[in-house]
Length: 531
Image 1 (tube, rainbow, N blue to C red):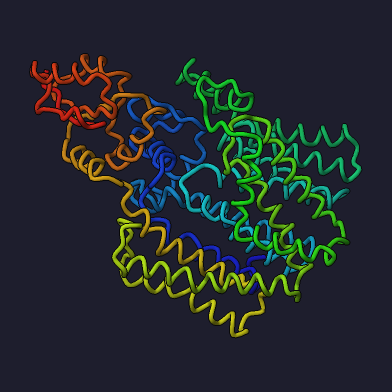
Image 2: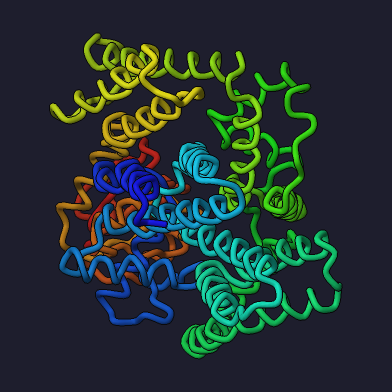
C-alpha cells in the first residue's frame, strides 16, 4: 500500500495537512490543556496508572492517550509536554485511519475510488479539526474504525486462517477501550455484528465472534481499572461509573453536553462540509445514481454509519466528536456520489464553487490583516511563511480553473485551503487565547509568582483554569469555596474568579489577610495571603 506512488503521495499529503503546523497555535480550549496536563503529571511524578492534576483531580478517561503524549514528549522533546507533542497522537491516528481506509477501499473497489475516499475523509471538517486537537477522540476513532475494517476483512476471508486478523482487531479494540472506556470496544463490535447479520451469517456464530472480541479487548483495560481502583478508591469508581454508565443513561450528577435529538444531524451536516454542499447539488441529478450497485463495502458503510449515529442519539449527552467513527463510512457514500456524478454539470459546478472560495477566502484574510478594522481584533499573520501559505490555495485554484487538474470536484483546492488554514489562519486567530486585558493581567500576575496558586471553585466549574494551569506547569490547586481559604498557608497566591461576597473580601483585606487591596468590582482578582 505505502510503496505505490499513489499511496506514498497520499501519505505525504496527509502529513503536510496537519503535522508541520501542530505547534503553531497555543491551546485555545478547555479540553486540550486538560488532556496535556495528565501527561505532564505522568512525567513529573512517575505515576502512569492514575496521575492527579490540579492538586488532586483524577483523569476523566483511561490513560492511553496521555501515555502517547508522555512517550512522544520523552522521545522528541526532552520530556517536556508542549502543543506539538500533545497534538501529535491525534494527527498520527488520523493519518493511520485514513491510510487503513485507503487500503480497505482499494481492495473493495479500485485505486482511484480509494484515493478519493481517503481525501474526502481527511477534508471533512469534523475529521480535519479533530486530527489537530489534543483530545482523545481521534485516537479513539482510528482504533474503532480500524477494528470495523478488520471485521469486514475477516468476513471476506471466510474459510481462511484469520488468527492474525482477529489479533489485530483485538489489539485495536483494546486501544479504544484504554482510550475512552468500554464503549470503544462495544460499539465497533455492535456495528460489525450487524453487518455480519445483514450478510446472512448465523446469529449465534456472529454473536460469539463479536462477544469474544469484546472479552479479549477487556483484559488489559480490566487490569488498569483494578490498578486505578487500588489507587483511587471509591472516588475513582464513582467517576468511572458516571463517565461510562451515567453519561449513557443520563443519570450523571451534573449536566454534560445535554442537547436535543436533532443535534446529531445538524452536526453531521456541518461536520461533512464542504461535501455537504455536493450532496445538496446532487439532489438535482438523482436519476443519475438511483440505481447504484449495492456492494458489500457499501453495505458495511451504511450499516456502520447508521449504527454509530443511532446509538449516539440515545444518550442525552451529545457532542459532534462522538460521531467521528461514522465519518469514514459517510465518506464512502460521498465517494460513490462523486463517481456517479463524474463528468456532469454537478461536479463541475461544485469544483468552480470551491475554486472561487480558494481565491476569495485568502484575499479576504489578507484584507483583514492589511486594512485596519474593529471586527477582528487581535488577528495577526505571523511572518513570511504565513503569507506564502495564504497564496497556496489561490495558485492551486487558478491552476484548476485553467484545466490542469483532473479532479472535477477541485480536491487539490480543498486540500490547499485546509493547509492554509492550519499553517496561517488558525495561528492568526488563536495566537492569543487571553481575549481581554483583564485575563492577560491575571495570567501575567500568576506567571510572576513562584508561590503555590489556589483557585476558588472546582475543576468542572472553573474550566478556565486548565489553560493557565498547563502554562504554569500544573502549579494550580483548587479550593471549594472562599471560606476554605482560611486554612491555606500564608504566602500562597489566591485566584478568585467569582467573588460572591465582596463585603467579606473587603473586610478580610482590612484585617490584613491580603498583601494588597483586591478590586472587588472585578469578576476575578488575585492576592497574596498574608495570614
